[in-house]
Image (cartoon, rainbow, N blue to C red; front, side, top):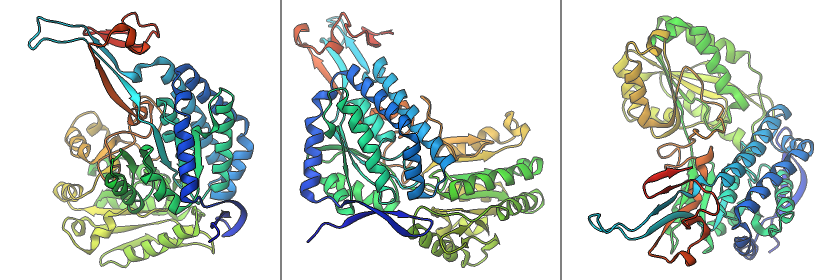
Length: 509
């Protein structure tokens, strides 16, 4: 049977643009993984690694116009949004090059023997080494930042791990062009081009997670797809780490005092956040707890005015469009659910934003309304109207893990008066990033960033954004009583590489 073709499709029309490739066979996946494994040694030199990452960043920057044009044709996300996302991706590669140069990620710790300790301490020298080939599963909604050259790939390469990327079917042409930029950058530093492999096709993704030379995986996508791969990673004869981002509701709690203080500001801010990128951000606020009556009504009216004035938009593909239309219709059909602005079908290829309201009491116990506690991908949010603090707390207690949780406080509450500290403590168990008087859309690439959360937001406690994302692809190893002549340079007493380390209990920079 001939391999299935891989087409680039225009989501604005649903028409095929060009045949990009064919779906990879099991043999081709095997060849890609083995080529990546063969490139491991070339990544061992940190200076070469850092130079490669910087060249990759420069190559993407140089090809900006072509890449953005290709991405827009396949995703309809718009050139402004995509230019910003590409700039973020370029910055991220350079940031990881700086991390590689610094060397702190190796976590070097050296303890000399101490016979006086109880029990006695032998000579111990610890650092971290790369795991091996990493499988990266691209996301649909971030064709640059969570795709071929995105955070998983950048952090894995920085750790010294080659990658094989399973492209997303929504942007295969862009995937090929970005992979080519990375391979050219690798070749310029004597690194085999197989250091960045690329495969297409659903079955190729299954073969990839099962390959015995794949040592870890990173995934961004749906709960269903991510859980299937997570289970496959765990069921292997040798299970591997699977760092998956699966789904998030990203709850927002608006206090009564905040609603009274600035209803228009909060309503308008919520509208902007939930419709940003046609609601296709993984941190879109999907459930908002707003007080019943009074100022809460004014906030909802402000939200309705802002959302009603937002244009219909194109989703990433027609399958997502169909799922969105069906999903909002099912939710809107539940008892006591209203739609002040009805979300759903826009034009032939678009969807219209909107939001639903429901009494929060409907969400405090298990039942049909639990559907409202599941992520609906697209420009819609659910506003749950709570009667009192206990009712809001009861809803929060039923939520699954999230990437973010947000609280909108009044100025007095934000100053530490009232329940501000208590509310922060209530939200902390729910998410990896807790926001005060802001909106979750937009994930800064910064050393302190954490993009992850309790399951199902992610399948591990690590982050996929920020410098510590590199930790996912490393494992610690300790050498005990190893002669100095046998030690790697990172662990020698005279520190020939100038690494930050902890030496006999003292931090050296």
